[in-house]
Image 1 (spheres, rainbow, N blue to C red):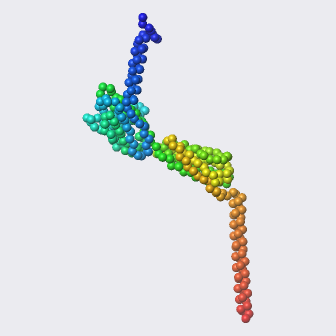
Image 2 (tube, rainbow, N blue to C red):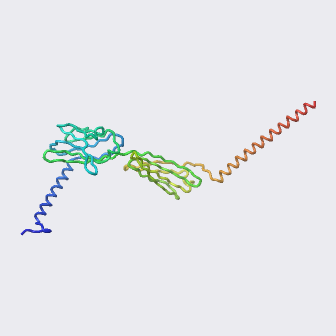
Image 3 (tube, rainbow, N blue to C red):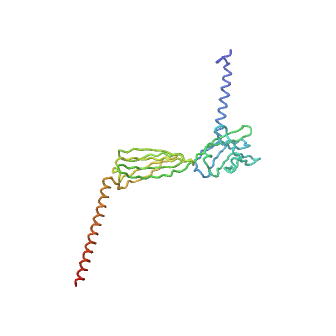
Length: 279
């Protein structure tokens, strides 16, 4: 007697599951047959992506596609009959630089922001259909870092700024208390991001002679930038007024001394003139 599961014969469900299981195995096997590697490359420099078919199946055509939200977009194909065919939108952007049906390489002549993303290589085989692999391209810009400080009347600001792609992460190594941190980021049209972190030190004298380290994390690598707080001379308002008053006093004394000396000389010359007239 036939067993029913949810109103359907059991053997129908078993057959259905078996078919899907076999399809999944075939799909996974096909993915494993293509070896690819994700790449990271400097923006505005050449970049290459490679695909290698590990099976010995006969390949008719190799096609490279860019993955997009709606559907993949054909970029370039290679076959023995037609050679390399580059689509118009990619004519001056890339080409197949390893001509083969088992191993294929594309090269971007000069990467732009639009080139970042994932790409599929499809091996159209005889009898087994299309076997595909995916390789992703990440474009980066090395960090440009600046580290400086400025003393104020009652506090000290230490600023570390880094511009890179993708956005860097800034952290600090600093000793002492009474230190606050503020961070802001700004995106630029060229795809880079500037991250600026400022340490606000309430008692600047505690940092004089000490070393501060700004750590910049970018693409898994940490870079240290060091700055020693040299003994600065910063004015307080009372000190500034005292110095100004002293300078003014010295100028007045100099003017008074000059005036008295000049007056005495005039008197001496006048007396000498009268004596000459009397003789």
